[in-house]
Amino acid sequence: MINIGVASIVIIIINFIVSIKGFKNYNFFEGYKFHVDKILIQKDYIRLISSGFLHADWRHLAFNMISLYIFSNLLEHKIGSILFILIYISSLIGGNLFALYVHRSHGDYSAIGASGAVSGIIFACIALYPGLDIGLLLLPIFIPSWIYGVLFVLISIYGIKTKRDNIGHEAHLGGAIIGLLVAIIIQPNAITKNYITILLILIPTLAFIYLIISKPHFLLTDKINFKKESAPLSFEQKYNSEKVDKQKELDKLLDKISKKGIDKLSKKEKERLKNLSK
Image (cartoon, rainbow, N blue to C red; front, top):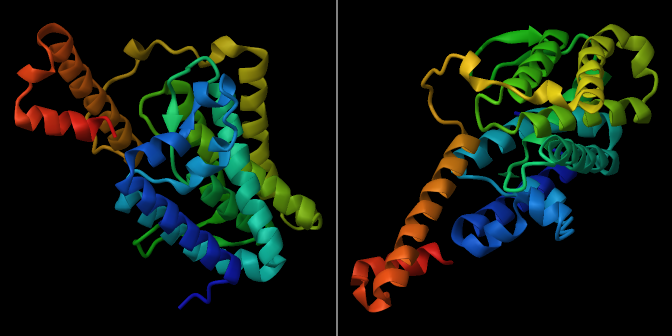
């Protein structure tokens, strides 16, 4: 049984409280999720933090909190509660800032979840624990941390470049790298003890960041060139799909009202309109 630290307990409790509030209150959820235009135009910067405590559903919340639980004591025991919180929040903000930069021209882009922050905690552990083996969730399989780190970076870069899904790869990658860098700042001796793993993670990431800054067109992708395959919906895909469906349903009801008047709505339609407008 993992002995969880105080900071980890507090973070998990806050995630549950905020996420449950978001499950029950649509306006609360919409008011605190990551949304590009709300942040850049309306300067609602609190969303850079608050969105990291909202989740799409119970599975999304449980997956992130279990991942945090697994790595939390390993890191919190080594650096203490205050620095653990520093890495968590820095990774959360850093991941969202990277997502904000990548999607700065996509005003309607939105996201939720603690994945960026949790990625930062995992990569801080990778930096500070040379030779660490990482288990695949719910499977009795362990791989060296450097392989996990390199695969994570490559998959994230591929996901950002191809845009084949609605997963927030930008926040994941940004959070992971910030977590790793802050951990190195806290314990600089990690560079000499674990420099190969750190370089294997940083070099492709920094090269990718340089490309998207110096050559923005690098991210422009002709999706026709990629084969479309059906797959189970991810947490983020499910959230975005449901959001689009609800908006279409609301637009249809509002269009009916504008043409025929609200009195022409059935009792069921009026109730649905009330729920969608919350």
